[in-house]
Image 1 (cartoon, one colour):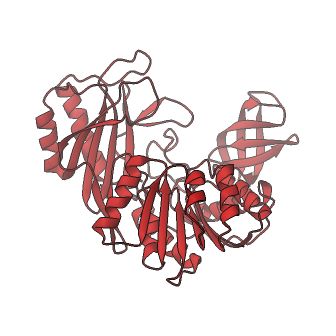
Image 2 (image 1 turned 135 degrees about the horizontal axis):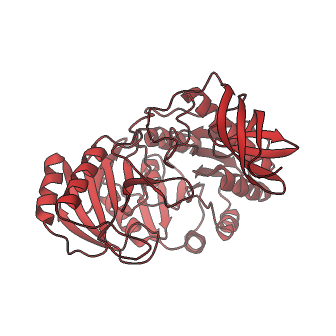
Length: 436
């Protein structure tokens, strides 16, 4: 197979990012935006030894699940990947993807329950991070730094469009240049927006704080409905979006949100689930899987600002949360105090080092980042030997790897339940219960 060849073929499989997979000349060919069961015309854009990448030229026989994307920049923007398929197809893909990862990576053949749909599939994201470049304000195309300029986004909260409009006009009126990553010049790099039940936070990442007419910009944003406005200083040559210094212009540096009957204060750089309504369903389910009776000690590892641990605290005897980010631990402790929760303790440090010295746990709850759990942590969990582990994951591949390790440590998988935390994208959240 060579680059620039074209083929008419049938899509017989699905890749990890929702792309179609065809078998051509005994090679797997990955075709973005092609759906399972379709007959398509494909242009080969890259041919490697064992597989190739193709561009979808024409859908000859469409899937009954194919839909017309509502977003005008869907095929350019890297934010979504499933708008060309109906929601039923998307949910089935996510269920199958979790099952495939468990089998292929973990060697685990177990029932995966049908993916639980999100209460909202549009305008559900409570956090948006918009890049600012000479090409406009928006999101980057997949696997590139080519910006797709856009005034609206189907999965972001509607208020984001109005905020972006105000900042666009401010930059134009005041001749404020966007950041240029090649020359390391310019002022505004990113716009971070978080919208929770407590209001809207606007955080503008800049190279320095010397911007003209900030008072007027702040007034406009507050008039629109912003509860918090701040600058974030980031003058490093880096792809990391937020720097360490925050300068409040209006309101608090945290934003309130409520999950169930617990109120949280969230900092801009704190991890917080991006789909608030689905998060409540997920946390209720995870706590129910733990089978808490009020007599258990629970370790909440990678606890962030304490969300799942505080949610579980009223069903447990004691909760100990561990998190390496100091600011998040501070937030977690303050959240416990604000809610009058006295049986939850939060410690700062590497979980694998901290939990060695704090005794045993009946239940361990794991909610790691996309890279999954550290091997040393899993060995330490084996040593403290909890009866039950509840693992919350946003990456089926690293989940499968870690479950394989835990199986080797004497744990069996009881329940695997995917949740659609990220509608219209290929990402999927998953909750797994393991028993010793």
